[in-house]
Length: 79
Image 1 (tube, rainbow, N blue to C red):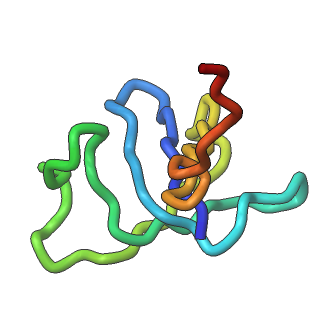
Image 2 (image 1 turned 180 degrees about the vertical axis):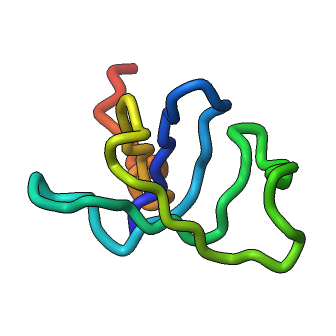
């Protein structure tokens, strides 16, 4: 489940997990565990909200963040 950062028009970016990245024909994107970039709760949502749906036409662009196992890969190190 990739973690993505959605940059929404006239709003702060929203981070969350998505089951899959949106395809070209999709009209909306579903984010699970929505939060701000710094991990804090979104002020516009109730505390018990776990999933939000954004229409694609409101999103400027989407950043796909590296998953945890990708961050732990150790590359070649010359000593």
